[in-house]
Image (cartoon, rainbow, N blue to C red; front, side, top):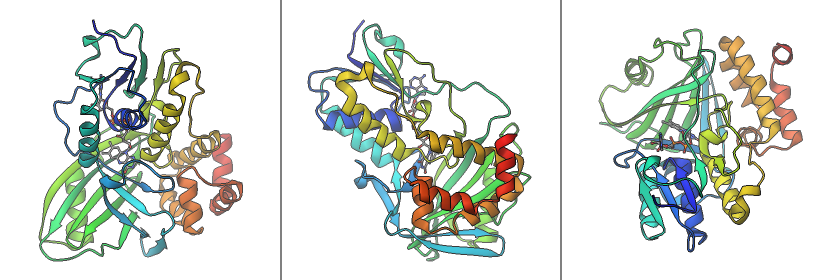
Length: 355
Ligand SMILES: Cc1cc2nc3c(=O)[nH]c(=O)nc-3n(C[C@H](O)[C@H](O)[C@H](O)COP(=O)(O)OP(=O)(O)OC[C@H]3O[C@@H](n4cnc5c(N)ncnc54)[C@H](O)[C@@H]3O)c2cc1C
């Protein structure tokens, strides 16, 4: 069976980001790489959005970028600016196409559908398939989004809505998210932070229809794209092995309080590319322990007090937007962390710490 220097298991966001990073820095000129990806074809299946706090390789895959956003809780709205760190949405279809076109040019890179087709004996493996044991106590961010085209111009394309909590909560944490791509096109997403141990929150089509018709007041529209998924708000199992590194969600790149993963994947890819000549001895790349600790407390509070979360998120955004954005994007300093922490209901968080 054929052997390769490197194997990437899973040609999704993390697998392809790493392969692209290695390829454009000429790390695959004299090395071979196998990418294992079972999907029959690549098509647009996700929209990756984030505040651009660091450069990345995919500005040409950005569908739209915004410098203003809003947050709603029943009866209250705040408008915020993010011109220093624009919010970008990446179209996964453009991302897959750009990377696959580039990788095709290198004869050292091969694609397979299943790992059993090649030998893994002497390879270094980058794995992006998470090992998740089913546990009904685990929290997930689960959601469904539709891109709609309205008959008449409706949206203000200069401002997106990050969270609208003015919707049914069902003893959980629920909000809508609206990204206006143009005056008559937007992604509208229903998002839940919950234990997901039954299907009672998964009537997504109805939730979205009611929100678009009732809340936004749009009657005449068509759905032109749909995405659905779930992000674990816990770290998948990660066993240390000498010739293997986990990447992507499997590698702990998801920020647990927010689900943001895309930019962490990009930073991880850069780190691995820099370490590639000495990869077996490289130190594990992690989201800093400070955020792991703070997110753990945050999720404990969320678990115990779902009814308070809309208010807690709203309060968090009463800090200058630059500070919150840096905090949510793992780039805040001690003073900025403190500003956020001081906005939180102290006793609720202290109690969660000792629970
Ligand atoms: C619908 C959706 C929207 C999201 N939106 C955002 C966002 O706005 N911002 C953000 O930062 N994050 C977002 N995320 C979170 C995160 O960025 C994505 O989940 C991202 O795709 C994670 O990358 P990954 O490579 O870890 O996983 P994936 O992109 O899922 O890649 C894993 C790959 O492994 C393949 N695979 C599965 N089983 C096997 C197997 N046995 N062998 C080999 N390959 C296998 C899959 O086909 C897939 O291609 C979103 C997630 C989802 C699901």
